[in-house]
Length: 187
Image (cartoon, rainbow, N blue to C red; front, side):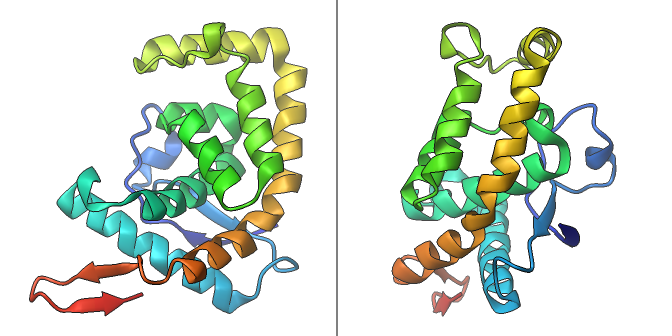
């Protein structure tokens, strides 16, 4: 895979080099899986949603749009730094797994569910230090398993881009935004 774009989602990561670069994550694309116009289509939709969420808050994003934010953001983060980086950024694992399932990438949904099973009682703490202490323990005690799950993720995530583009097209009526002048703008 090759680097092709930076995403525009504001990262909530702490103690990472990527945060210092003011970048949420790096989005990678596999040129054998998706046409450039689909990549641009998904990335532009993501950027518009991320900007709206940043300006107007979480309530400005509906459930169908949230799928795009979760999947595109998680894919870029995991491709950039593995599951450790995913947990540094504090994305919701269960909701991300469900989002992958909704777009039809069940294999990734299953992988993410398997990762959640590594946490005591499947509970991922909100507190950064507590969460990262558990993550470090998982890497120390089950590092091979986590590495295998990351490798499985990288292979399975190749379908995500096509499926996400299809999700946006199927729900095209949802992907409109009210401009400040009250006109509706299609993405």
